[in-house]
Image (cartoon, rainbow, N blue to C red; front, side, top):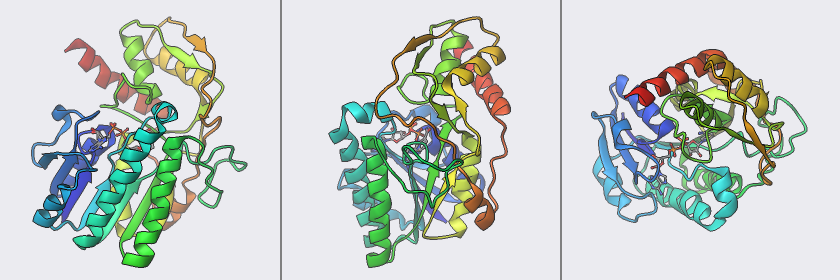
Length: 306
Ligand SMILES: NC(=O)c1ccc[n+]([C@@H]2O[C@H](COP(=O)([O-])OP(=O)(O)OC[C@H]3O[C@@H](n4cnc5c(N)ncnc54)[C@H](O)[C@@H]3O)[C@@H](O)[C@H]2O)c1
């Protein structure tokens, strides 16, 4: 199949491209390298350095005739979106609409979209939270992701464009950027390995952590269904304070974290049920948090030493 992956130079997108290429698909990547890295780009993929908002992406659609489009590129930071809601909407809403218009124009069979499960269910009253629970996006980031879910519904009903929406919990693993404001596991690991101070905003807020390769499995397995929304989580959550302790012990560090006030606009508790995707397409998370943290530590150890 001919597959487009937007954000294919980023953390999730590059793992997805690597796995799809093992399946002998023809891969094209669109990425503006704003947070993505050239070194993550699989050499067997055709790479276009271009912004998803650029009208010239039409030429790429025209040339390659995609069967499936994975829309992974995004402004992915909740804290950034709280300070810059207009720029967040510009990338996450207008950029996505530019893609959706091209999907319709060039008759793409299906678009698979990474929404958010970690940020879309603010103040959920059911845990683990399932897809029937009302989405209550609070941060501009979650609002823009939810808006695209609604646009996908429109494009499906009116233009016949099939979609699958995944709502992942917090993703972690090798290649995650430890320098941004998102990606707490990568930030803690990278700091602890370099004996640098870690900061915790609040600490009692809890998150459900999914290993990146498990998410990639879900992204590929969901090709076989259409017009569905699936949560991607482990049904377990851990407070950020306890997460820090876990990583500190595995990394063999004695550093204590410094606490700062909680950030307004962040979800307090996130714990997602993946019962629906398990029942429909047999996906379950395979990697335990301990194993995933060890693999991530090994990755960052190699990076710090090289
Ligand atoms: N990391 C998580 O915990 C998590 C959780 C839930 C959902 N998601 C979603 O998964 C997706 C991937 O996240 P990630 O953690 O890999 O982020 P990332 O920042 O590593 O990857 C995003 C990629 O998109 C590219 N990009 C950003 N803006 C672009 C633009 N305007 N035009 C073209 N390319 C652009 C970046 O250069 C980067 O390569 C995002 O949609 C994010 O919202 C992430």
